[in-house]
Length: 392
View: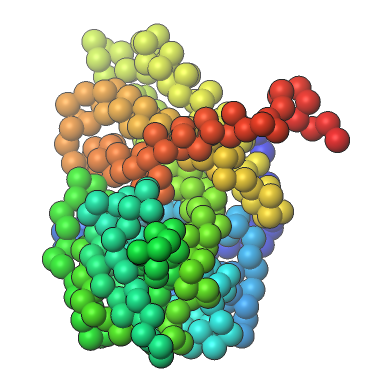
C-alpha cells in the first residue's frame, strides 16, 4: 500500500515497543486470559520503559510528546502481537488525558506521576445497567454537601474495573432540575462505600478485566472533583473524537492482522492437491478485502494527522469508527470461513480474533450511534455539497 508517515524517532519507538511486547507481554497472555485479568506488573514494566503514557510532560515522567502516532504504533503493535486485550491504551490515552484536560495542577501533581509509572491504574465509569450511549439516562448521582459530594449509583461493563486504583466516575449533580448536569469524580481505591463486583465473563477480550462497580454514599472530597461539577457532559463529549479514533486504529490494525494470517493460511492449505490460494474464489475474496483495508488505512492515517492538528471532528471520527469496525467484522468472518474447520478452533489466532472483534461495533458508541451522528450532520442547515466543501 501507499507509504505511511512516521518519523525516524517513531520507527525506533515501534521497534523498541515490539521487542518489549515479545519479552514481557506475549509470554504471559495465555495465563492472563485464563485468569481474566492482566497482572499489575505489566503496567509497571511498561511504565519503567516509557511505553505506558508517552504524552505527559517530563515533570510527570512522560516524554512530553503529544503526537498521537505514538499511540497508533502501540495499538498496531498490540494487535500484531495478539496482545490487544491488554488494555494499556485505555489507561494511557483514553482516560489519562482527562487529568490534564480538566484536572487542576494539584490533581495532576498528585496522580499523574504514578499513572505514568504504572503504579496507579485508571478506569472510567460511565455505562450503567440502563444507560450506555445515552448519558442523559444515567442514574448515578453526586449531591453537593458543602465540603464534599455524596456519590451513589452502579456502573457496569467497566474495563480495568478490578485493577483500577483511580476511577473517574460520571454522575448527575442536579438530577431533579437539570439531568444534563453531570460531574466527573475521582474515586480512589479503598474509598469507603466503593465496592467492586465479580469479574464479568465475556465473549472475547478475555485478559481485559471487566466488572460492575458500586458506590454507596461514597464521600468524594472537593479536591477530587474533576473540573466544573456541572460540565462533565461537555468534558465527555470533548474526549469522544479521540476515543473513537482509538477504537478505529485498534480495529483496523486487528483487521490487518486477521487478513495477514488468513493470507498465509490460504497459501499453505491444500485442497484437491492445490493450495487454497490457487482458487479464484479465494483470490477474489482477499482482493476485495485488501482493497478495502488499504483505502480505509489511508483515511484513518489522515484522521490521525488531522487530529494532531486539533481539527478532527466528531463526525469524521464517527465515520472512521463505523467503517473500520464493520470492515473488521467482515475480515474476521471471511478469515474463519477460509480457514474452514480450523477457524473454529481456538488454537488458531483467527478464532480468537473473531470473538475479540465483535465488541468493537459496540464500545465507544455502537455502529447505530455512529450512523446517527453522521446522519444528523448531513441535515445541518450549513451542510454543503461535496464539491464545495473546501471553498472559502
